[in-house]
Length: 473
Image 1 (cartoon, helix red, strand yellow):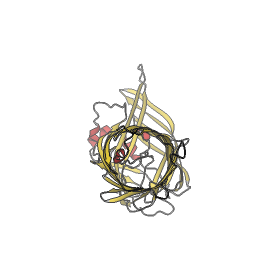
Image 2: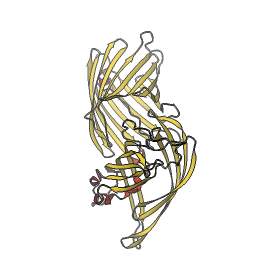
Image 3: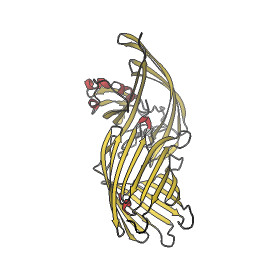
Image 4: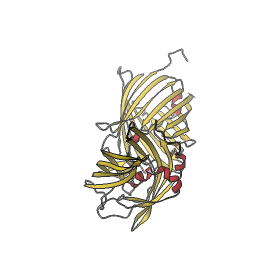
């Protein structure tokens, strides 16, 4: 079983949990998650070939912790939104995944992460999904009784029962360590790294034959707990890019591009995104493939069209989202206007139709922005943009760019820096990029959290563009 992914949606922070002498504990929250379960079992029956079972499922759920806590802890409910199968996974025809929708598991959660499930809203429907109980009982990380303290280290042992082909027992020796406070997407968090050697064992009968299960391994997880007690999961998402479709109509060029992105570059780096596309005189096509933890895959196909004249350009783009149980369509509209030499204004209306992508509704967002090239120093550009939802300003971005003259060098150089903040102007991320070349260009981009403690994403790209020659239209 892989750890739960980062929350799919983050509502306003709830009240902080009761303070504990010494450290941070889990507290009230309502968050949406995606969790991945992988099962590999080999069944050997007398006189028969070994039967191999490989199944992978993605569980989209809402977890609600309600305070105040009593002697048994907080009230905890898990509501199943949907279950999707990994590519290649099949289930017996008697199991209907749609029957899991709306199931509610009710129990208790202690501030140190120990949960117990006592009730389920429909026990008849829940019989087919008995394996969910094992995931939900261990969904939250185990914290020490005194709470999380930066630099703390400890070892504990946990034993849990689960259902594979038969009832099995899993015993884990968990070696945990807490890092220092850090910013994660503009949220102050503590990171807890856990390395857990484990064994799995069980005996029973299947088809009136004795069955024995044995196994061992090592699991490594990285958990994040916010300063207000919210559990923020353990997965990095791929880098997102905002585009104004009107930009396709500014230059009547033809171009082809490709980009590859990785998360946490280094010895533990993982491929996170591949995208490529082309543009020809305002008509563009792009394809993006995302690689999330737990084997979750996503794809986006985008088609755009734009035109412009006299400094004004407008365009639209339609995106088709797929993968991870998603099959949705969204629209973006954009406009740009050269208000005066060196000053360009733009606005985007994104996520028209508010598609639901991997269990999360993409909110309608308005993105006004501007770019200014100071007259005395045209090689420098300042830019800013805001992401505004119908009820709040979600975030801001501030950029600074510098580019050498195309005539001063055969290979012009461009450097870009961007600061992202939340709606309260608190630092959320830094992005730094550079490129070399003109019509034929290649470059790299790196991003870090707001405290610049490490590089959490990097990408390389290449672009080939051609503008129409004089006399051709």
